[in-house]
Length: 151
Image (cartoon, rainbow, N blue to C red; front, side, top):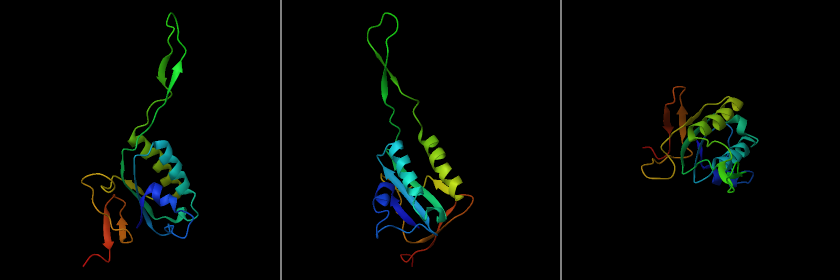
């Protein structure tokens, strides 16, 4: 398994420092990004030449990531001379974002994608050895199989 922070991971994509995706489980997390930026980064990730050869994707914490809905002016009606502000669209929830964006990636590549691993930024998070061998079972169990740090 390889990965880490999504924006940092993509910053080295296409360079000699890029992590190989083929045959691996990819772990991703991020902090403080809007859903629109995350969506763009996910699409960029999925366009990597070996993304179709991933075995699975495991998602950690996406701390302080949310939808930003801009307001727009609405022409006053009736006697009111003051324009009102209205949201330009409904807010997208985290659950809906994860299901729609990562769900489409799962369907596209025919791989399992699991989220909710308590790894990322913030208190109470677990450490996750990268470069180790893991198994993601169909029922969602995530097991560490082999790691040089285990004795």
